[in-house]
Length: 448
Image 1: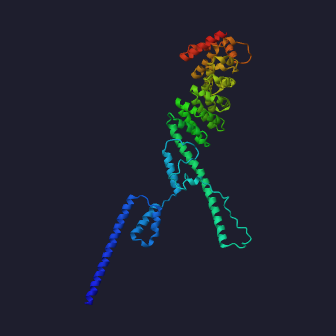
Image 2: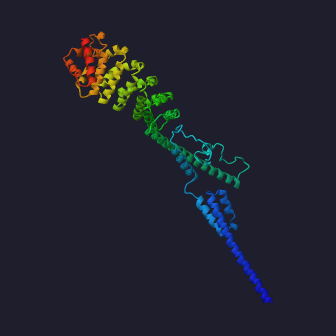
Image 3: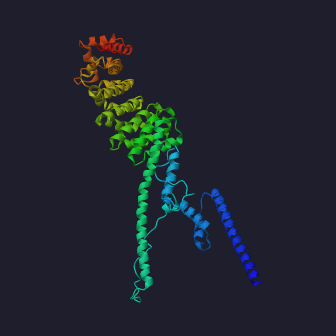
């Protein structure tokens, strides 16, 4: 009987163990299925949940250990939070095709930025070392340092080291962030320069603000962008209203030859319309100085800008003081410089009020020899136009001046046998050359 009871008890125990095993396996399967569903719904696990899992080590099963390893794999990243935030900020800014409002670093919002982010609040907090003292208490009652005082001194030293590292890292980030901002600005300017179009007032003001940048690459890109956008009349007016001429004048005095060239090109393009001339009257003396003393490219661009501004009679009084230098460039300069100098003289000669002053200005005695170069049509045409405009009004101003003034050159030219060369030009097949040569020939006959 006792044997049967014992066998019965063992069967019950075996069944209990078997049921417990099945229950444990079922519990593990349900647990695994539940966490798999949670993994599909939630793409992130917070650090708080992961810490809670770490603290409950006593009640963990094999399935929980697998989930812990999954969390470790997903939370650990080779990049720091600062680096990931920098990458996100750079990606978002490069996606926008607009120019930053200012070349300076200005965060748009603190929302969504971690405390240690370069755009977060921590960057704009300063830590002062003045309120931290590393000196020990000078009281005479404490002759020996206690353990608390020693630990306090150690903490102060460590705090000083951390503060110095903080200042170094912050200075490095401040040096790197403007570089990143410059990259974004240069990319935006390149996009705008490749496809110039009608600008908005906002874009015009942003371009003008970028003229205050200390980065020469940004300055050059901005100036060339302004030059390209100035092809549209509406853009020229917007740039003038946005105080662009004021900043261009300051940049004309730069020591960099490249910046001077880019500024002069921008002035030349903006000054095409008559309404912009009043904004550039104060620029004329600087442009004249660059035209006289600059290198060939700067010289030709300055003459081009002056020729555009010479369409306004208000600028003639200033330019007249340098007519002698302009005539020398028209005679002895390179072909490009000669063309722009003659273009400037032609625009001056259209003002009847200053023709007497032009007649009395000193010019090279061999200036008319350029008429013997019929193969250089543009030069001959501009010179003929200038001389015809002047000679038409020269009849009443003939004198016996010994200086080689423009009037005396014209007067002596009418007495020479070279007048036949002018007749040959008057019979040229080119209608423009023929017309201007006839005008000059008739005017010279009137002087004689």
